[in-house]
Length: 202
Image: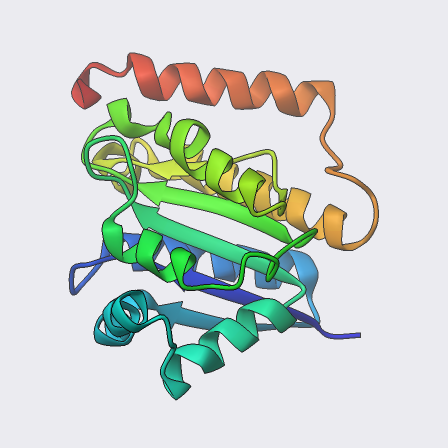
C-alpha cells in the first residue's frame, strides 16, 4: 500500500534553505518508507491565495486543492523558517484558513531553519503547541538547521537528525510507535548540546 505524504515548505526566499531542508527530509522519508507518494508544496507560490483566504474566509480552487491534499495525506512534513523565535505570518495564515479538524491524529514531522542556533527551541516553543492544538500526532524528533548545519562540519549531524526523525515517522505509520530507544535519546541529546555549544553559532 502506497503511503501518501504532503510536505509543506514555508520558505519565503528563492532559493530557500527551508525548501532545501524539506527536500532533504523528503529524500530520507523516501528511503525509509519505500512505497511512498510525496507532494511538495511551496507556500510562497500560494501567498496571494492565502492572503485572500485570510481576508475573505474563502479558499481559491488552487488553495483548496492543497487543503484537500493535506486532509487526505497519511502524514505531513512541515518545514518553516524561523524569524524572531517563531514561524512567518504566511505559514500561520495558511494554517488559520485550514479546517480545524483537518489533521486530527495525522503524523506530522516538524522541521525549521534559522540564522542562528538560538532559534532552535522554536520547534518546541512555537510549532509543537500549534500542532498539538490541531491534535496532530507529532514526530518526537524535530529537525532544526542553522547555517552551521549546511557546512561540512555540521552536515553529518543534520543528516543524522533527519534520518532519526524520518525513521520515527516510518515507525508511526507502520503502527510501531516512535521506534526510539534509550540510546537514540542519548544521541539526540548529544547532537543538541554540540549544536548549542558550538561557538560559531553564537
